[in-house]
Image (cartoon, rainbow, N blue to C red; front, side, top):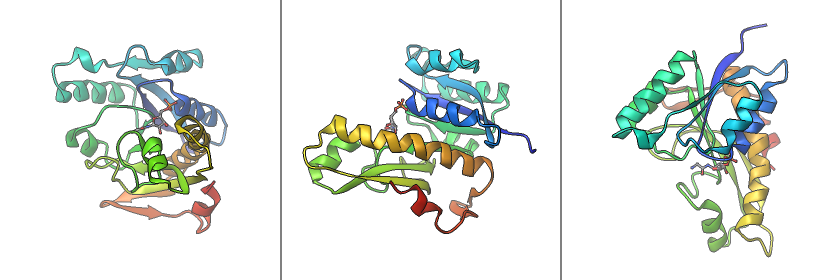
Length: 214
Ligand code: GAR
């Protein structure tokens, strides 16, 4: 079997998507191995969860660095020290500079809680509810310098139901995030989806995207 792709997960908080990726990567035939969990916040709950699973963890506290560049140079150095090949952002709440994004181009992916290109940025569930949309969801995409604008790898959608509040809708979307992210990472790690000159090259079966739709 070919070697598993060494993957880092960057978190800032509870890390439920991180946990979904860790659990998926335990399967013998999964193409990625979680080599590192890195947080910019020392108190991120996901750090303890990862350590309990025997995964290497690192803290690079953005508040301990004078500017974004020095913070990102340290993150980059730690990733390289661990031989990381793919980076998954999973609730990592720092905007990354073009320097870092270019350095990891095609190997840096993110999960975002909306059906991009709708609702880039923050408070996606509240904005979807305020607009009265009938479908909402989540997207895994390659990261490019423009915020939440990178090419889509996979999406899952859910209905918005009468009486939904932010908590109910975010829980419905999060359930899909936990399905979608492991599937998308597997596709990237196995080379079935690639970023080539800013566009997606996709070797997956044609019905794959439908399979992922919730
Ligand atoms: C997830 O819903 C993720 O999509 C979102 O933060 C949450 C993190 O939860 N990410 C963003 O909003 C990125 N802009 P988790 O820590 O339990 O995975």
